[in-house]
Amino acid sequence: MRLSIKHLQQQMLAHITGTPEAKFMQAELMHADSDKKTSENIQTHQLLRPNSYLNPTQALAIYQLAFTARLLDCLRADFPILRQHLGDPLFHHFATEYLKAFPPNSYSLFDLGEHFADYLQQTCPDLSSLDEADQMIYLLPIEIARAERMRVSALRAKGTEGLTLLEPDYHHLPQLKRISLTSPDVCSVMTAQASLLHWFNQNSIEQNSEDCRRIYLAISRCNYRVTTDPIEQWQYDFLQVLKEAHPSSIFLEDLIAQLANRCRYDVDMIYARLALWLPVAISRAYILVELNNCEHTD
Image (cartoon, rainbow, N blue to C red; front, side, top):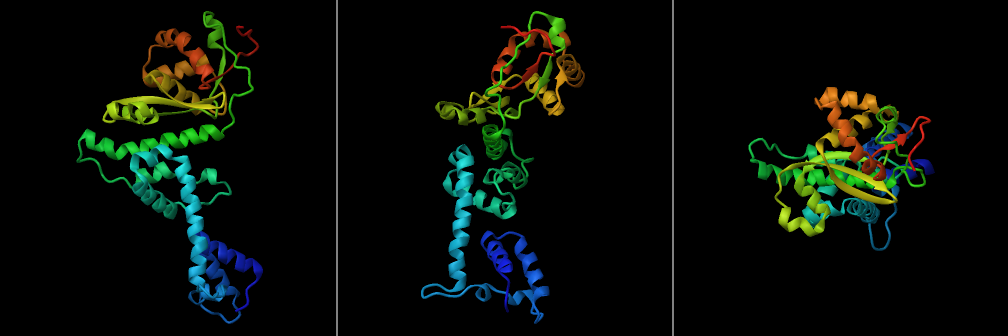
């Protein structure tokens, strides 16, 4: 059977990567075959020649294993804390199974681990019969994977470096209400068990590894440095409402009205706390401020 260079290249790629396109290409070749051979007859030995040391299947396996090894290296690089938490054998098992469930479909290896946390969530056993401490053991790797993916995304996203971070007059309430806020791409928020934060702070792992409290985290990048910081619940809810408006901006007054309506917060309490927290949120790239032609503070 004579195949075009294009078909040979596509067949090799499909066999090496193990992608779903392999079956598609087999079917396409079946229709293109003038002899009407079945797709099952198009085997590796018909595409490759043996050499003095290896048959076609063994030769192809070198490229298949090298391809998989490269993908596993990328996952290890993107999820170092998860790897440390699980240990190499268990991490290798989950990563290998993940690649089977979610083979790469993007030109960029940055996208490879996009669904890793979701995969761990989907394959997690039913925890309803377990107590809180045992549930924590199963859920912690999922939360670590989610946090590490957010950190990788923060590294890659367009940040605030090079921008002038404007600040309003925090003591002039009418101006404060009319500032426009935007959520930077480098900022993400999540809720997790407190022990997750201790895995990002290596000095506290032993003392706090069984902390079951729920905490709120903001993951962001400012001045090319990624941070994972605890925040209060109202700050988490504030940033969540802001993210829902993304990529559009929203007036602070409107944002607080939505926040108060949804979460039953007292409006005056939010304004009072914002005077202390907004400077921190702006400096850490949780929030971008547009002053709408009002003079900003020096």
